[in-house]
Amino acid sequence: VKECLGASPPRYADALVLAAMGGPELYASAADEYRRRNPSRSYLLVAQSVAEGKLSQMVHGKPPSQWKETLSLLCTYAPSDEWAGLCDALADRLLAHNMTDAAVLCYLCAGSVDAAVRVWSAERSSALEKAGKLGGCAMSIELLKEVSVKAAVFAHASSKSLAECPSLARVAERCAFDLADHGSLGEALDILEAMPGGGNSVASVGPGSSVEEDVTAVAAVRERISRVLPPTELGQRGVRSVPVLPYTP
Image (cartoon, rainbow, N blue to C red; front, side, top):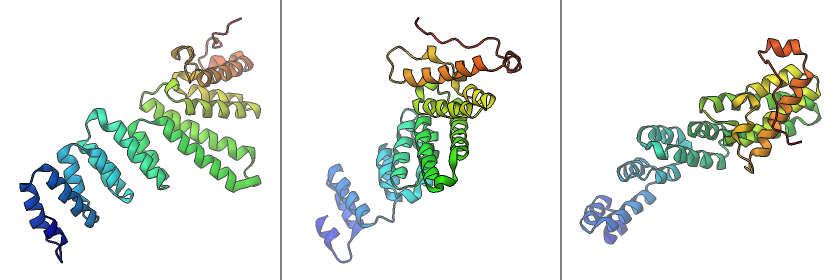
């Protein structure tokens, strides 16, 4: 096998045939060497990954530029219990190569709403930094609203609670607080009511939870805004009573 691989030109077919007769370890070694010398032939990596059920090596081995093909293969061959982890791994790899849109799509396929929120928040910060003084508070609030609404839609679609999305809770709280600070109380309440649980899901978070503070903050802002709005507007929204937080006197 070594002589076949070292020949000029290399005799890959003979090397693989001989390696197959030498056992699985020798064959795997020869196949790895063939793939290393022929990186453009990624179909070999795909075939081996699918045949051996080791899709993670395909996720980490295929070029990031071929992410659509990788994702479609995961859709076809990934077991349900490995799907989310493999999509997350693909998204992490794409994010490391600054392919943010593709990474977000893979995070959403995995149901990792909070990871997508972190990417969107980073893009918002970058946009504000580029805008400088020309952006101002209005641009900041609009970008926060965009992140909040997009994330809320995907959180509902993937049946995620606010307790499972602490980054979303922080963004929603900040967005609602800024809107209320600028007099847009109704719009602030709209943002909070769009969250999973209507922004009042404190009861779903256990005491001492690492996300308890984030979720409680969202419910607290919602309560304050509800107390300030006129009763007639609350009635039009179908809110019969102001949400009550479990405060301890």
